[in-house]
Image 1 (cartoon, rainbow, N blue to C red):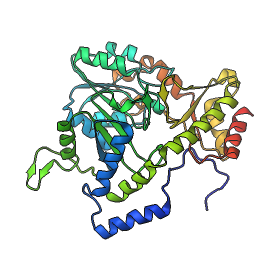
Image 2 (cartoon, one colour):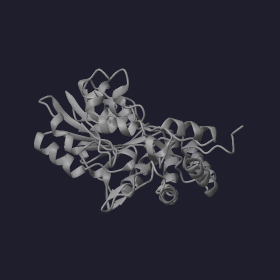
Image 3 (cartoon, one colour):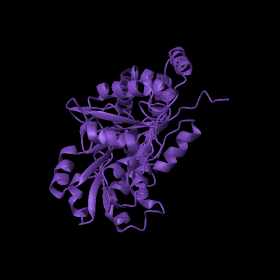
Image 4 (cartoon, rainbow, N blue to C red):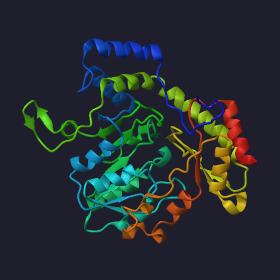
Length: 370
């Protein structure tokens, strides 16, 4: 039995069950349950319009578009990236036979520090893979300027950046490719799912081939593709969730405002404020613990919250560069990544979702204040 007193870090956005049943009946009656059916096509169109992007391709999860983006752009050699992310970011570089090169982060956003990228470029560098951490937009103009000067591709891991806009323009328009996750923990979800944002029709066609084993038609395989298609049920789920996602984002915004108001004066607690001219999606609400000022370590507060049935998350801890696969890399040495280590060792993401009520919010605040 579920614990009703448990405050979870996230809660999935769920469509209306009766509407979902109706769409499921349509799928059942059509007997077309996968392979780019009508709901797949509709969700791509709806998301294209919502984001205001040229082309989008849907995937069965959020990792495969990252994996395929490197294949599609024929990336080899070294890829500059961040150690402060979910492991899928770097795993996709590794799986493509490329070498990840870690660069430290900007402590004001958690993102790859654009001022430190050039120092990491070598003759083997072919791409940059930044992450819009917590939905905070990267310094896209400076990163693109560096990429243009050195002839590098830019692939954005935008797993957290659903609906994020800078001066009215979708952050997904930046770089050569951006990828999204539609996992159940995200602001918008299709239970499991993902997407890739592409800027020209020829690349869109290539991506659609690669995600379907490389098939161009019934008898023609144009390349060594993979199976990463999303099914009709999850597309129907996404179509319905898209109709309510803006309401959910505004509910998250209200939670963020309450957290900031209550915690701003607490010595030893810091957090990110909204960035001017950015439409945020409030995918996470990380706080950072200064043990000397707060009088308690991050892990002590984390354990205290768990004892009070409040689930936070040390997100991202440990750093990707600390895992056994990567820690032998020169760029993974802790002295090269002081800001990333400091953030990883001090962060707790508080419960943040559209279904949090006033009691849950206040319980979380009280636990931190006490």
